[in-house]
Amino acid sequence: MKVVIDTDPGTDDAIALVVALNSPRLDILGLTTVGGNARLSQTTRNALRILEFMGRPEVPVYPGSSRPFKGRFEYAYGFHGPGGLTVRLPLPKTKAQTGSGVDFIIEAARANRGDLTLIALGPLTNVAKALKREPLIVEWLNEIVVMGGAVDVPGNVTPHAEFNIFDDPEAARTVFGSGASIRLIGLDVCRKAGVTRADEDWFRGDSQGERLVSRILKGWLKMRGRDEAYSLCDPLAVAAAIRPELFTFARANVSVETDDSSRRGKTSAGYGMGNVMVATDVRAGEAKAFLRSMFT
Ligand code: RIB
Ligand code: CA
Image 1: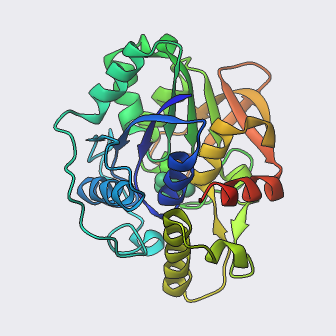
Image 2: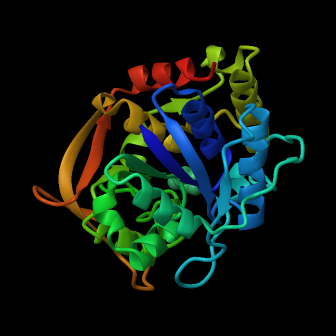
């Protein structure tokens, strides 16, 4: 399966990239970066660092949007660390591409019609811009797997909104309303798959992927200073692209609140018909075991 991954690394993005890079099922044509967990310059540098650490410097990185459609990104340094990662990785030797992430999404979809899956792990700004610039990508893309939303559960930024949607609700409304085939992995499922210190095998192993995941999680637990579960949001989105059978999906139309009220960024599903397959449940034990198996 050919994929482009749009990402804002970000600790869980990094774990998701370890899984994607190690999966024999995925042919990663490139990464596109977006601001969100950290500033665009930081998420782009983090993407380069992760690729080099994993021995995959040949995967191209195309910088995308530094700002949402309206206002500015709310960064998440308190969760992902001061530079967007809870681990210090060597500065990258490779450089980002000079082309834009939005153009790369369009050109990759054009060149691989019907054979490309877009995996979106951050605010949907790049994806929405690509859809506006070239509406035909709705037909060209096989599907868009989106990590985002809190459909029937509370949000993680406000009681109503999940971070990726909250950071650019206008973009999310454009994406969900585009008619593209979307698989939506939200807080409804990712809160069911968390990692704690008790998951001792997540902190073991000498492969690059095992070392990176272990260092990220140890850094996160140390930074948080309490033994809370780490939600595997972005990794589950990659798992949904590779192993959709681990999830239960319900077809829906998904709407997004874009007014400036306390409900801004809220995602609601009208179940029955629609272009979005909302993940309503996950076989969490099996999904965690699958993710762990992909670190080597
Ligand atoms: O709400 C979780 C999402 O927001 C994840 O993609 C995480 O990386 C942050 O971007
Ligand atoms: Ca992310």
